[in-house]
Length: 368
Image (cartoon, rainbow, N blue to C red; front, side):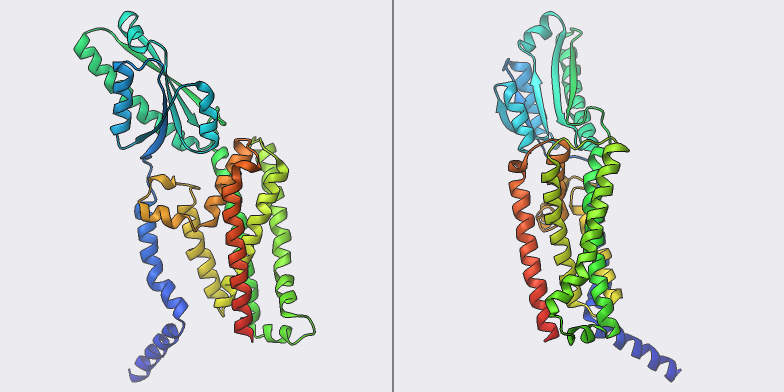
């Protein structure tokens, strides 16, 4: 029994000696619980909407107020012309525009028929379906109240218009997300494991005493994954266009340039991970779980970030895939130019520069 307890004690010493592993074992369940508990939701709340109301009568004002006081919508802008609709969607300021017909209440009283057009961003078909359903229900409840009060067969007919994705194809949403996931997987995870393998086997020291400078050795380890990422990017684009029928509405050159910046960022992230770990197992845990889980949950790939509690929304700002997916949707789905992704591109460039400097500096310090 004493020998058994000694082995058990030895194993505890071995576990707690590696602080990184202990942190993963103890913090990962907490992180997963928080993310799964708050990020996974099918509800869409606090959706920014704009109102085009040429009538400005009692009915349109009441419907607008009902939409605004609900937990699902926030009226952020009132517009006066249909020409303002497209710029609002391109700038990402709204997710839906409610357009009332002229003489709305008067037509409702005299003909019993009035029209409302709900214009949504179809690049995310799941969210588009949900917010249209919420708005339709709110309008339907108002219609029932009018019927009870006025005893006239009112009929308000919402017309649905989906921008960028009129056929509601789910591929329009998940293709940008898959691009972000695969690039991060190949670059960050594989790069960190590759260098950690050299350190774990003791061959990194042999490489460093060779005539080649250490920085060239690092580059030689990362270039193959850069090439593989380009091949994966090409494959994804070909499959998305010819198999999934998701066209590249914007500039292919801009899309490739954006992807190159993202690949550079992911490679730098993999180098940083490899500089703080000594084994492939820990590198895999950090890359595969701690890195990939927030990417899936907080990037907007599966669940809208706007629906999450504000601490998670703030945390999502440091997830590189979030900015890449937003930019890819603007170029690939909405057909916008490079001027529309200046914010996302600047953030990715800043993250890449910071991670590259931090990883190279940390790597040198450890090896010297």
